[in-house]
Image 1 (tube, rainbow, N blue to C red):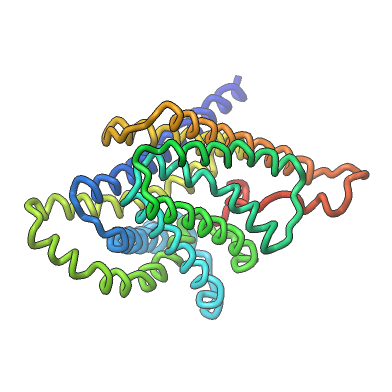
Image 2: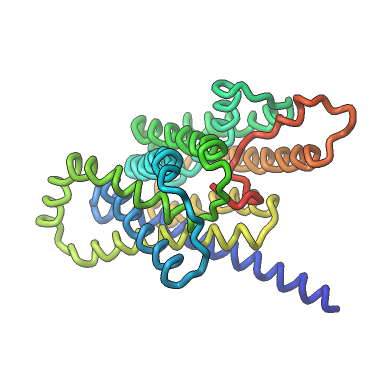
Length: 338
């Protein structure tokens, strides 16, 4: 009886964790698109900088004041030799996401970001010469096919936004791969990661934001009618961006790897649906089919990766040594680190 109650409690906790993760993620995406489109604040570097500042403050409060998580100590030389390069890639990743959101619909941007597993595998194969078995490559076929179909049939296609989203996928993959070497020996949770990387990202992005967008922001402040409510929305999006990192920490500890993978892909579907209901961007039937194929492909890839990881834990005596290195690197939720 007690086991049944514990099982129900665990299930409820997992569902609540997933729902609050979905809520923060979708809200941040919708708010950013609203800022660019409805508030006419067309400055993705500045928005990203606000997010980094809010995340820096939020992480400091969570670790130093509220002591929600213990601080993972990092040597000063490692901060510049390891954390700074990761922060640079992290910064590029966030900025490109916001730049793409500035030019293309949420539905298209979210579908393109689902291409990240494919870019991760391809980068590891081309640059790091890592071996993967045929099941991994086969699982990427629907992802690539779905992205192609979605791109061809996208009614609001913008080449600059498309390229920004694709390079953003490469940045995400690069960050994941570099984390395995640069952060070796440190097991960062999402809050400690933000604590160390967000200040560096703020420092990296501040000057480009001022130089490239400073005059435009000043002009917007003088010409936009409802400045104060708009600034509140922009700052709130930054606060929610930090809350999103906190929600990832919570969901990581409340779900299994398979559940996390499926929930992540369903989250994309929720974001696409909600954005369409709010912004009413045109979506053709074939475009929706392409998006669906991509999400199914991502779920299938996650399932195949899970099966291979289970086999790698207990390899067969007949399994060649090379096959023990066939698992692609991803931001695996069972490894509590970036």
